[in-house]
Length: 301
Image (cartoon, rainbow, N blue to C red):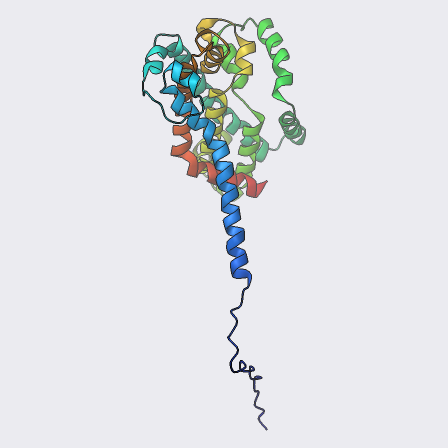
């Protein structure tokens, strides 16, 4: 015997009564979406407006920058601040920053990779203790280590030298942590195959595993470049020689005094704008690799 299922018929709208449109979550969702975008726009303006003021002020005359400091219109428009910047020690600061940043970035990529691979793959006594010490360093505020850094550099006779600017920054705990997490995600079978072919530990690291860590390496490169380019406290305690000043120290002196005193805002903002360009370019060119590398470390961590 077959049974037929019938769905209950919907009641027909009463004659003469207009059909009411359902107001459901559609309108509410649109309202929430609108409010969300409005909040994002407000925060974007709060975040970007100071940068836009910096750009506009760098193209103003000193009198106009003082009269209307929050205006985004440079009237009259002038590049005098940039021309005047070339007459200061700014080119020397820029050259010092380029040298220090490139050396520190290359050193961090190499040494962080070595340390990360050793902690991830090589079995040795005390490995967990070493990794715990690396994690502990992450929790120590950098400002606390400034005086010990000065004492060590002074005792080693490195104070007021280029090595004092570079050597203490060659390794950082965050980079070691990121590389360790990435190397642990590489299949061990890849290394075993290379070991069967007769490759040693360093050969496996250099020729097999390191090329596979390209996203993590680019992440370390971006973080190291940005960190060393914007570093200020370490450079303050490592040197007081004007010939060894970097951009951060130089621009800070412009803001706190010298040419930045009085109404000389345009030259200070011009220096800060030029200082921003290299980091912005590096991030724009490598941002997709930065996201991949960060995700790889997060998945494993």
